[in-house]
Image 1 (cartoon, one colour):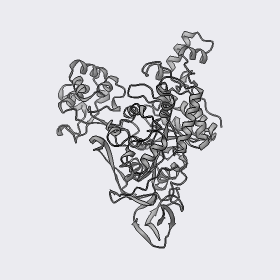
Image 2 (cartoon, chains in turn blue, green):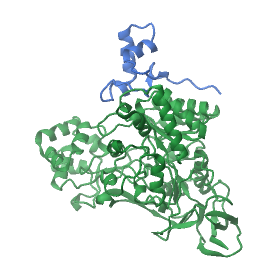
Image 3 (cartoon, chains in turn purple, blue):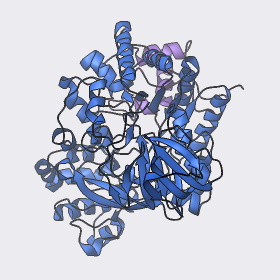
Image 4 (cartoon, helix red, strand yellow):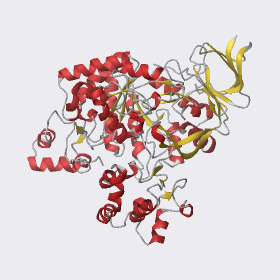
Amino acid sequence: MPLTRQRRFVTPGPDETVEELALRALPGEPLEAAVDRIKSWNLHIFAMRKPAGLLLGSDVVFVEPPVG
Amino acid sequence: MFDVIVKGGLVVDGTGAPAFTGDVAVKDGRIAAVGKVEGEARQVVDAAGRVVAPGFIDPHTHFDVQLLWDGAARPALEHGVTTIVPGNCSLSLAPLKAADRRRVVGMFQQIEEMPPEAFTTAFEWSWEDFAGYVAAIRKGLSINVAPLVGHSVIRLWVMGNASQERAATPDEIAAMQDLLRECLDAGAVGLSTSFVDVDENGRPVPSRFAQFEELDALCAVLGEYGRMLQCVPEFYATDITIARIDQLAELSLKHNIPTTFSPLFDTAAVPDNAPRAIARVEEHFARGARVWPQMQTRPIDISFSLLRPSLFFARLPRWVRILRQPLDERLAALRDPETADKMVADLGPDGGEQMMGRLVVRGGDAAPSELVGKTLSEIAAARGEVPARALINLSLEHGLDVAFLSASQGHQLTDRIGPMLAHPLVHIGASDGGAHLASFATYGDTGYLFSEFVRKGRYLSLEKAVAKVTSETADIWGLKDRGRLAEGLAADIVVFDADNIDRGAELPSFDMPGDGMRYVRAARGVDTVLVNGEVAYSSGAYTQSRSGVICA
């Protein structure tokens, strides 16, 4: 039975920065725009967490907006 | 000659099969016969008019420390619970080096709201490894224990301070695998991990610093033993919960292990949260994965006073910081007008009306009797204050000993939750037994299952409800010896009144070490509880039996 499509995500690599993750997850996009997108789709990391933006190895990082 | 015959009861054998009138005989700690039993016994338990069922199994508890001075995990046992699973959410008390004890105690205090005295006055630390912890609790058990080992403590043992700083190296992962094997050999029934918790300094717990590859390596070890992975996901966000379900499914399929996540809440704020998660679980089960969502039966009620920190304030960092100070400093902060102004401002322009207005004064403490039962909104209006200010000032006027109840914060809609509890893939659990001591009672969820969802709502039959918390739980966790009334299995038996079994009122109790307070609920309608063939609780009293075991 095929799985229904859900929101795509990646997990950070060791010591990976948000810039490196954004380039990996959104190749071809300008870096600044890619980082902004990643941040806007992951408020649990970049807004709700203290310190904001601390990337953890176990994090779920969404690479697209919520699936309509 | 049998040791015990439980005679003439309505036998609900845990399989979901129709109940029948009969007897259950016990010999040498095992069930010797079920049905019409002939013969004599040293002890006869009259079960006429009562249900005779397998002892209930609670798969999500934090009784790790309480078991060191209370082998019955009171009051869990009197509710008919004969087996508990401690060590959830990445935290266990072993393996733990002496130098790291304070650090892990801090995590237990922060995450599970346990008082420091529970770790300093009631027992002597005599162990570091998992086998040592098991030996320390084994001698006093009157309830069965199926312990998990925590990912955070395994990581801490291997990596020290770096466990809360970075990814593990291949050598460190290999060392964690070896340590996990050692714990499983010593009696652990699986591994727990956490994706959400922080320590007393607000730092993510060690398990959260693990790459997926580390968890995968540990699950490879679980696969060698066929053991459980438990995790606490980001339950406040559905998309993340579903991502975690997908990860668990991947691990389950790859290593052929059962996995479970807890809690899964139903919430009016996000009504599709639980249904979406369950639908995703259905998809994965259809592929052969085992991802069991644990759902609690009780609504979310939170009580608190300003005498101690509470998860009620979890989203108010300033309040958390102040309430965690020693009493003198806390009082000084609350009395300081500038600080109090900032605390009130934290609640926003409504002064806390939305968050605090519906709080109710509980009573039974220093609260003026005329305020008991009134809402903070009413009290604030009478005082000419906003709710947050009224909460601070009223507390200060009575030595902070005024308890407030925030009732039904979520997970309270019986007509939504009943069908979910009855769902074949929903695992009834997540009681958090033994944790959150000053916020709510984590005991009696099974009584509430029968009173609210069997008798009142009729969402589950008596037989199905019993099966959910006995045989189905035993099967999910691989507890082969328990969960059914069948010849040869361990004689864990509960005798209860189907018309009256329930949880009692939530009351403060000062029975923790250092006269520490916790909220408890006594059992109603439970007559007798046998653990491995011995009567451990009867007619409202605990016996001297110590027949509990570490079970696998």
